[in-house]
Amino acid sequence: MTIISDSTGLILLAKVGILEIFTEKNEIIVPEKVYEEIRKGKEKGRADAFVIERLVAEKKIKVKKTKESTKKYIEKLFNIKKGELEVIALAFKTKNSILTDDMKCIRAAKSLDLEFMNSLGVIVSLQHKGRINKSKALEAINKLEEFGWYTQEIIKTHRGALQ
Image 1 (cartoon, rainbow, N blue to C red):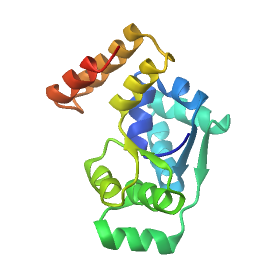
Image 2: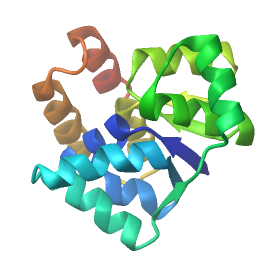
Image 3: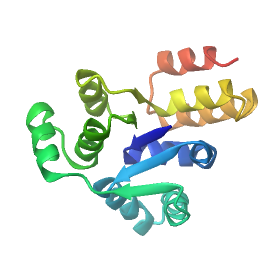
Image 4: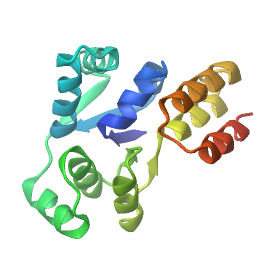
């Protein structure tokens, strides 16, 4: 499956130790602006940025350019900027799925009828497919809970979805 990701999705999966597993059976693409955002994290010494950078070097994550005309169109429609703008623009052109944890990006994806997933959904999916065991999935969800990115209700729902 080909998935276009924003920086937050990749960063969260890297932080919980799931990103490398996710890239094994999926083609992950990031727009240039997302890659720039990740490189800024590397400059600040963030471990997750180094993991992502290595996966780019290994060609497990590919960096692609987004057409200016498509970006302008999407920006007018949804008033989104930076990496999220390029993610939606690239997905709109290619009809690929999106990995994002950003609400503006999710709303735009829904409006354009684009498939999307968030980091919690990736963890549950990997566990359902037997790529990680339930213990590893719970550990990853617990780490995401510590980051405070998701509400308790969303965390509980995803814990309950594990098999």
